[in-house]
Image 1 (cartoon, one colour):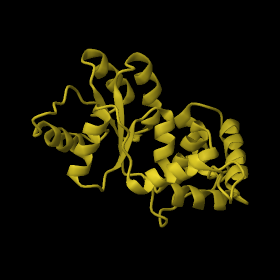
Image 2 (cartoon, helix red, strand yellow; image 1 turned 90 degrees about the vertical axis):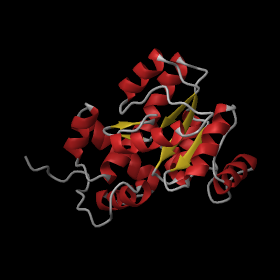
Image 3 (cartoon, helix red, strand yellow; image 1 turned 180 degrees about the vertical axis):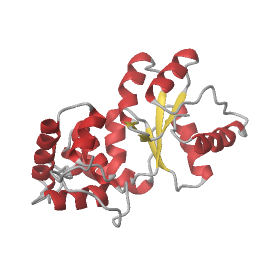
Image 4 (cartoon, one colour; image 1 turned 90 degrees about the horizontal axis):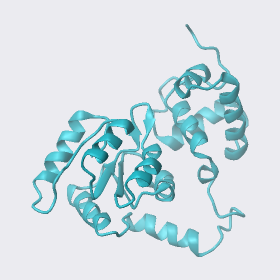
Length: 225
């Protein structure tokens, strides 16, 4: 069980432990802790939150799959599956469940991925089938603007939506300000944002990371020290 909130983790661990056919072999709040727990006692299923503090749960999938290819990953997240489920599945997850679902839905999802079967909502399954079955008439490549972003661009967009300024994002990702500004330029082009303020609005509304009422600095705005 990988979630950065100890109280949430405890609730989920208790939920799973109450089931006769399920047992929790480890829990973690960071990518490093998750990999260490998996190495100590490899699980059949890893239930992973997308937001792990400053880290992205998506960044756990590749190293976990590389070191433990038999582990099935179920993403459990508060983020809208319409925006994140396909990205998670492409990164290696076998299922996606939103945190507002009933406990029975989560338990069913765990059992499905444990059996090697995928799990998403019916609405998401229909979208994926439509997506794979033919081109999207509104987009030549059949992908939404968000789906065309790289993982790093997606991470930068999320941090921007959380209210972080350019320099703060650069420090968080340990890259130069110029690199982040380059990411902003690519994001504006791919998302059709005309300026920094519009990019912030898109970041807030599409990631759902913060309330629209939260003050957020546009790219390029000065950072107070």
